[in-house]
View 1 (cartoon, helix red, strand yellow):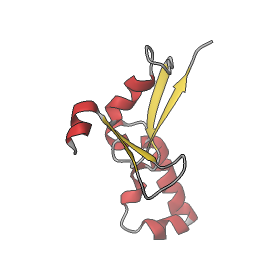
View 2: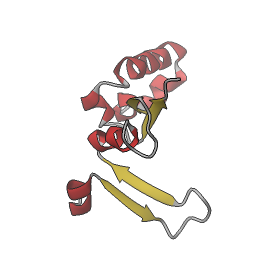
View 3: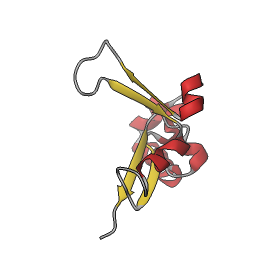
View 4: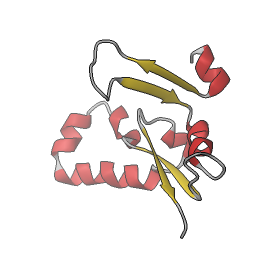
Length: 104
């Protein structure tokens, strides 16, 4: 883990080999995303949930084989859904999604 990520919980970097609006990359610790968008922030969401996008399925050594079998694909998807907000598993995902709700 890099020093800026340890100190601040986030790193922003623009990848020079890519052009356009998706060229910026941001690395965050799971525990820092929720406070950045919750109550008292510029985003000001009342409720925030952080989930892992990929889930643990990407770690399977035979992922491609399992994904092509509809029954095994459903096992992967059901497992990802069941664990998507479980903090230790969220951290295993390569990508995070912050979901926010405002009341009223």
